[in-house]
Length: 223
Image (cartoon, rainbow, N blue to C red; front, side, top):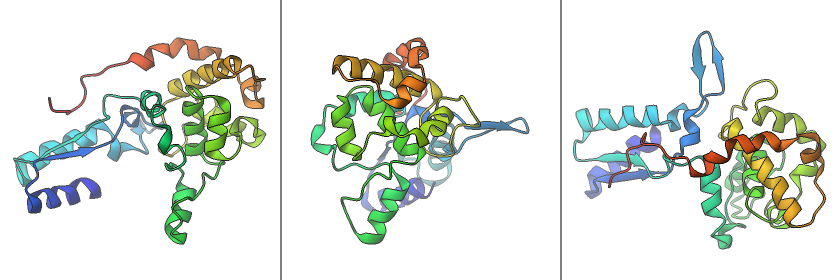
């Protein structure tokens, strides 16, 4: 909401009419049900919240300003599938809270992935679905699939234990699919399966292949 309404102010000052964000379809899914309500760590990134803000802004604030998310129709794994076409960014992007905090505090533009949080585990998985294992390992500086300490975290991401981590990660179905495709990447590269892919049988991922082509009309993307 801070980003949205700050952007509306900037748009009004400078005469812009469209504000594009990059919130994805995966953010619509919650983490756990509590007292009959779905609790969603990413609610302010969800389509429901975006639509409410959009309607409020057009009705009460600035009828000429149109707020939308350009990636709203895509799941995280679909975004990863597109992102691998831009290898020049592999060493320059970061989706790790600890790493971003270190970068901010130290002014280090090359802060590293921590390799121990839910976001690291999730991004490692979805990139592994489409990239050679060695290339993914080079991005993170280590092979997260060989870290036994991350097994409980991957099980949470898969929906096998506790609740979906309270972090900006995708839905369990995406993770199942990512691990299944990661297994295929290892076979393609003639590399032995890493520890976690041995302990977690990812064959269930075959049920979710349709996610790669999934489409939705639940978005505000203008023509």
